[in-house]
Length: 329
Image (cartoon, rainbow, N blue to C red; front, side, top):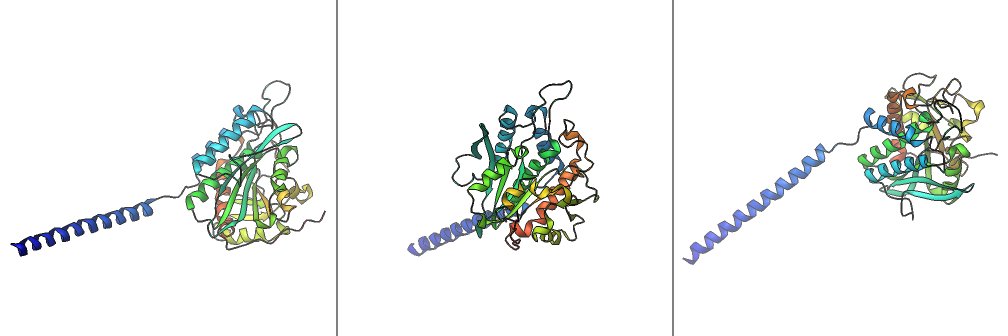
């Protein structure tokens, strides 16, 4: 009788182990399937158009610092950073870096995607979210919507933040910044640069006016200060075989390298450059109330954002480190 009981107990124990092992195997299989079926964020037309048309809408009132319009724009960017899951910057308790300039309360909007093996090395991805506001008087349209300048660039920052967060492969930390008061003299980016340890900042990727086809043709962009570091050459190498090409800034007489937010970091030695696609020498909408979302080609913005993602991949992943910039005043 005792032998029978022992035999039955052994059978029950074996059965229990089998069920447990089967459940463990099933759990592992489900986990594996979830990993396989998980999709990365795709930089698509719908997302890009949503960001662009929201930031360049009349509701934003031209996004001039110190106005209700720029407050609405900042809240939209903050909401996207939160949805994507970005962390706040350094010791800030929100995505805003608040400061005061010219008696105006201002704020950069900053979100961080922490890196893995090189989390103490930083890459900045930026654009300015301010613009010129509204005309004081006159008839008809009085709002400087700033769709190309620079809702298009901020759209790129938001799309890249979501893309890199979904990839979850960035070895270096990425600091996504929507700078304020660029139109007033790079005020936001200068403030950001005041307290950083520039030696830890590996590169600056600034996006400005990326909504129109350049004179270099479809699927191309140009880079300011191309000759000042090997940043541009790294991008060109990474873009080989994609059908997209990057060219040096064709407008050297305009001194554009120093006219966008990349300059504030470049003056600190950071290889920081601006991507653009717009033929500014013939652009009739630049700093005009006609700079509306409808005047832009969303497909160009999408292709440019994809090119920036691919072109900067080896820098983000820690494989390439651009040479430092030396600025001679």
